[in-house]
Image 1 (cartoon, rainbow, N blue to C red):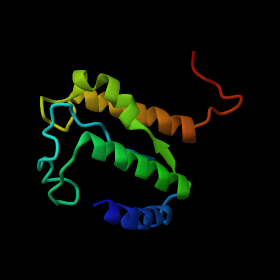
Image 2: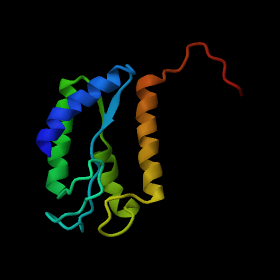
Image 3: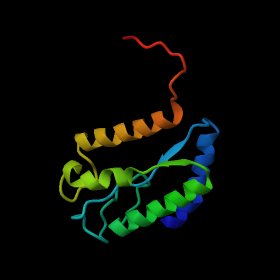
Image 4: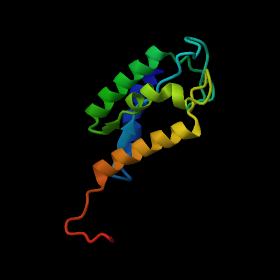
Length: 130
C-alpha cells in the first residue's frame, strides 16, 4: 500500500546507505494499456501481496517516489518515461506487466548509462588505445 511504501522506503534507503554512498533509485515502469484495470493483476510481486495495479496507480506511485527521493536526496532514474513510448514494441505479451528480452536490454542499458553519467567521470590525461 502507499502507506507502507511511505513508511518503509526511507528505512530501506537508510540501510542501503550504511553500505554504499552511491545510490540511485528507479521509478515504476508503465503497465500495458490492455491490462485489466482495477482487477487483481499482480499477486506474485516483491511483497507477495495481491495488488490492483492501474495506469493511474503507477503514475501516482511515481509521483510519490519522486517526492520521497527528492526528500531523501537520492537521484532518480525515470524508467517510466523511457519505456512508455516504446512499450507496445517491448512488452512481453498482451496483458503482461513484464518486458521482452529486447525491452529488458533497452531498460538495463538506459540504467547503466545513467549510472555511468553519475559515477564514472573520464580521467584527465588518460591514454586510450588507438
